[in-house]
Structures are given as structure tokens and as C-alpha cells.
Length: 118
Image (cartoon, rainbow, N blue to C red; front, side, top):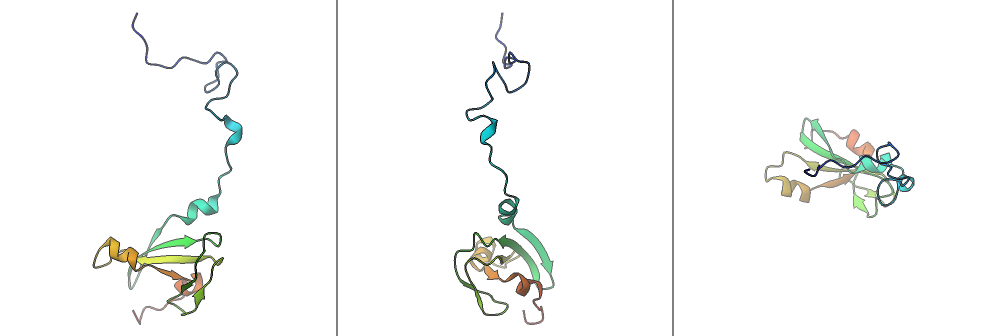
């Protein structure tokens, strides 16, 4: 009789539990809680504005480790302050150049920026 490629059913009848042992190496009790703030922070979103297309990523206070100068107000974005990392999505010289020219903005400076000087 040929061998079957299907996995055997567990003895208890519940999927993932075989002979009273939890599935996997660690079991289900070691699953860490999902940190939604951290998960959302690493994802860049696209914003359209009169001055072009922008990619905007939120930098949480926990991840802000360096001092930057905000182009909106010319003051420091100090470590431990949540802010935005912004770069041009439609850069004339391509994606590598746009990433090299990314800037760190205070959130309020980015939201209240004017377009007439750019």
C-alpha cells in the first residue's frame, strides 16, 4: 500500500495537539503580546501634496535616538520625541536619492507646512 503524504490525525481529535502535547516547540503559552504602536510605526504611508508625492513614516518616542534639525522650524528634534521621517516619493534621481535626502520633521511642523516656498 502506498504511503500517504497527509499528516496523521492527533490522538485527541483536536488539531495541533498530539497525545496531550501542545503543538510546536514552545507551546502556546509563550506567545508575546502584539505591540500595535510598534507595528504601525515601521510602515511608511504615501501622502499627496501640492509640492509632490511624499512617503511619511512615524518615528515613536521609544525609537527616536538621535538629534535632528526639523526643516519646518529649524529647531532640534531631540531624542525621545515622537516625530515623522519624510522623503520624496517621486524624486527626479530615483529612490536611492530620495532616501538619502529624507528629513526628520516635528509632527506639527509637517502638518502645518506651507507649499509656496518649495
